[in-house]
Image (cartoon, rainbow, N blue to C red):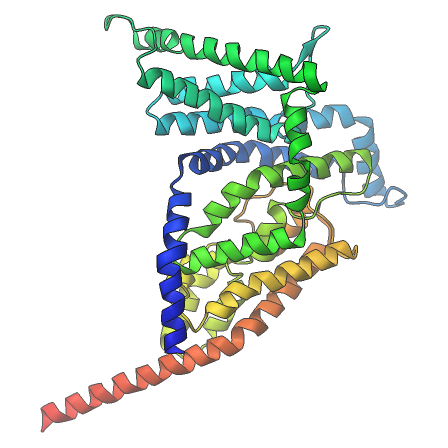
Length: 441
């Protein structure tokens, strides 16, 4: 056991930790993560409107309250959809500004100007203007990858020009706001002079504008991101990174967010059209089935710790139970500890993998309602899972099943770890008694 543990630690320290650290500190990963974080409040509120627009009642219900709600929703559908259309429907606005501002800050640029430049670059290629109208087709999930690319490109152009002194400099006496406006002039011209002709050329050659061409190229990758192997791989990476003491959730969600948002947009469009929902793997699936109580699905473990015979573990359970309800489990991860603890490595890694298989299989069998809303990651799992699936009951049952399975998987490993700790506690107690007796003699 000791040699196996030492080998595992060596692999983690020599291979996994340096790679994860580099990936986590990569400028573009940070910018993408910050962009989605900035857009999150608007998208959560926009998604919440779906609860009112599409209430969880059967279309042929005879209940007076449900019937009244359904009739009201159908009558005022256009008015009720406005907050959703101006948040989730234009999510790329918020994302592009957030990415541009974050990346600009990392390159020591003015974040407001870099965010606005990224926004303009996206609109330039993704919002074609004709007959006095702007097309909104690619302003939601269909344009996410375009928003990422144009935000990174425009900010890099801005940074390169400034680093090479290709800019308009005004005297120091000129107000700062005016000076910034002139500083951004050349980057704006370069972005327009490169992206607009490129968009026209691609459209002339393929009949598709840039966001349409990007989605066409990425269609196999987007489809693959919704498969069980993709779920298991992302969860496995997250768990291994965390076991090494690296915030794996930030790395994995930073990579998966564009796919999740594209899939969420498609599910919401299908819901509005009354069609079958096409996608399973979204952020609500990740948060509320795979990370129940936090990374490693440790909420059931927190309950087990409360009844532990080891004083140390029981104390950690009392400290960690309340935060775990809200998916914050650092007290357990570092207090038990789970991080770099070979006794708990297997359940910590495999519990979320088993939960993923259970939830994915139940969804494919039609037993589990699919995600259509974006929820705060701190929402307690059963509530969040139901909310994400438009307040269906099946996600609550699925969460409870996953919690029971998690507890059963953690229990034998916890008992073995508990016995080790109790043995150490007894040895310390005996040593203390022996020292006291020796001092009295």
